[in-house]
Amino acid sequence: MENQGDTAHLLARVSTLPTLPSIPYNNYQRRRKPSSKTKSTPPIIYNQGSFSREIGHAAAETYLITRLSFKLLSCLGLGYRWITRFLGLALYAMLLMPGFIQVAFYYFFSPLVRRSVVYGDQPRNRLDLYLPAKIDSPKPVVVFVTGGAWIIGYKAWGSLLGKQLSEHDIIVACIDYRNFPQGTIGDMVEDVSQGISFVCSSIADYGGDPNRIYLTGQSAGAHISSCVLVKQAIKESRGETVSWSTSQIKAFFGLSGAYDLPNLVDHFNNRGLYRSIFLSIMEGEESLQKFSPEIIVQDRSSKAAVHLLPHIILFHGSSDSSIPSDSSKAFVDTLHRVGVQAESILYDGKTHLDLFLHDPLRGGKDDLFDYIVAYIHANDKEALAKDAMAPPRKRLAPEILIKLARRISPF
Image 1 (cartoon, rainbow, N blue to C red):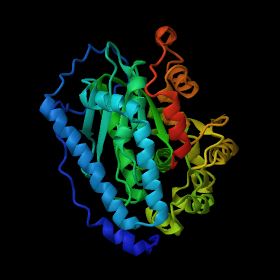
Image 2 (image 1 turned 90 degrees about the vertical axis):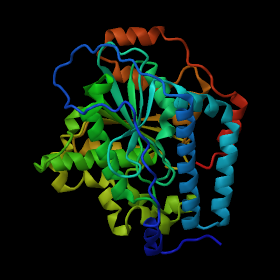
Image 3 (image 1 turned 60 degrees about the horizontal axis):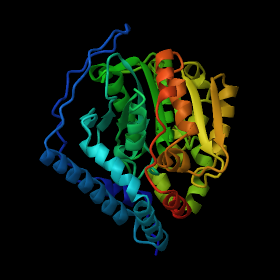
Image 4 (image 1 turned 180 degrees about the horizontal axis):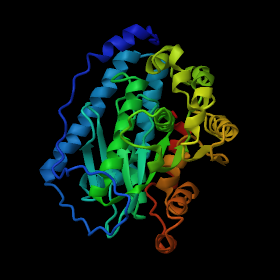
């Protein structure tokens, strides 16, 4: 029997979650405020930790994922639909394991990956940094917020994107945040905003350019990060004290995101993210509009705030069944009506994970990836020339396994 217990019962169980001890960051450096001047930065050399430390970290990460998965199952119940989805997810992961193993090896053992940098005091206030091999000048920065249906998001999901962008001299910061039932949407928005604040104030210590920061989110991560961006603009327009500014974000890239929650409740319910659970995540039906960027920007009280938003570019696959592509098209239409520079780019026949995972695993040419890199390097002729000479990206998984995984994907 599928468990759709009431909201109060689910939220009550959040308090039972134990807090993991924070993972130490050995080379943590003092924060400093971003400088308005761009200056050359000497090469930064990172020492790789001992093998035993890397194994310990891998074990801690595995424990976290496993513990939260079982906690989630205890909240959702063992209904037929959830069991089949989890089994489908397991088979999906097995099919793509050849690619995942290569990415995991890079994630855990590359000296260019700084894992679990602490940005706040909550259990999952950590972020991963992916650094170029050579930092001889301040590099542009992508802040990435992973998806996962607000339930299974995790910073390591961005490791493939981090690896590939860092190979093009772009620093990537993948922000972790509390998922349900560890937290609700308000906690997620708060965590991501705090993570962005850390990047804005501290990325220069890692060779990043605090004046060239791009915010990116995928699926639920696109929803959360767009909420953060809009709410930050509202705070600034009201003269409230803020720790970072929307003016520091050069553009927002949203991949396969949800931006109008009231219109998606029934769709998610039919897909297995049941209404009672979804409303628990979103802090009740009365909060759906409060966490819907498309609705927020139309409010008259947000008139001054919308002009503070950066260029917004939304990407979506036309065959996305998890979040229909109309979500991105409608949001861009609304942004145009209120005077925000925005555009949507649709990819014919692409599914929810094609743009973010399947296409990158294939290697070679990737239209979405190439677009983002070209956008970030638009005013850097040297970087563009280097991109043009870069070798083709390596294939990480056989095509037949990608096609099979695509057919059974639960997303």
